Length: 112
Length: 112
Image 1 (spheres, rainbow over the protein chains, first blue to last red):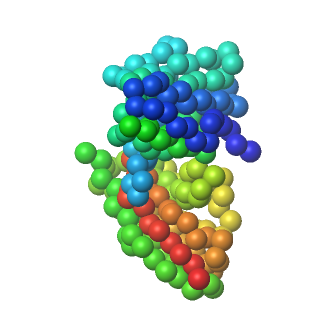
Image 2 (cartoon, helix red, strand yellow; image 1 turned 180 degrees about the vertical axis):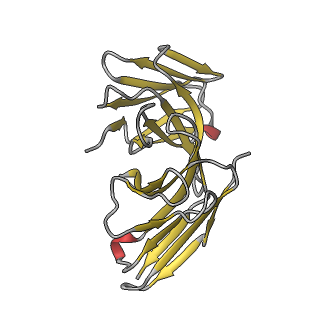
């Protein structure tokens, strides 16, 4: 079953707006949540990651908000730029686990 | 910077034929992974390895075998390729599950 779920499947925002990408997970032992981004015809690459010791992680225009009780997190991209257009994958893993589980991705398009 | 190299980058195979996808990493990572990426399914793990000589089944191992003859090399083998195995395959490496995973550039496989 899908242990990491993402929504929406696709999202279009105007340049300068804030894009919000959602992620939820099943396994309460997950304790590492990376977000990867993937540009067309390229491979995924790490964008930003959070561990549950905090409920927020910020890196420039990208911020992860984490809600452990609800097993949800979200990626906020402020002042979205056309260059942010990509597919974003939420992933999760446990320190005692074996590998990262990936969601099905959100395809973001930022329109100028 | 972490380096994961896949070969070939593109492959056309006939149904029933044998296909071997190769992956080499120069990061001295213990863990290596094979994912396939299909629209609507995100990244799904086929096989992974903890080190030379080890292979483990991921979430969708049926129809695939893996081989890890050395720390650097990890192969994915399709003994009897089928059209349903047409996909983009990514090899990746990582130190431990709860850290960044580094992806290769991918192999686009078409089975006709």
